[in-house]
Image 1 (cartoon, rainbow, N blue to C red):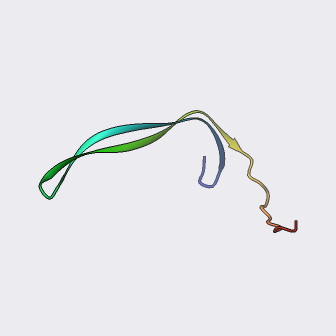
Image 2: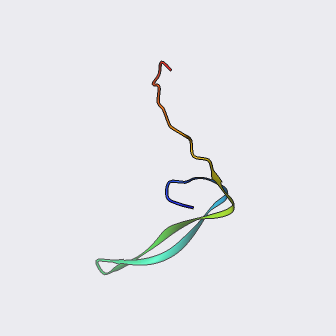
Image 3: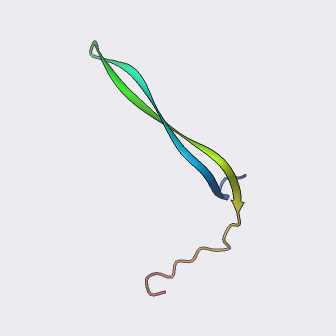
Length: 59
């Protein structure tokens, strides 16, 4: 794969919350940080279109 390639990816987006403790001005605060990850089952390279032409609203 190269930069600019068109891809079709089948899979799922997973999120995971991680609790953290943050100290602000000497006080501890509990916060949650969310991480996201893509778990791909299948990746397929698609053909790149020859040219993209925008004809506007009138066609």
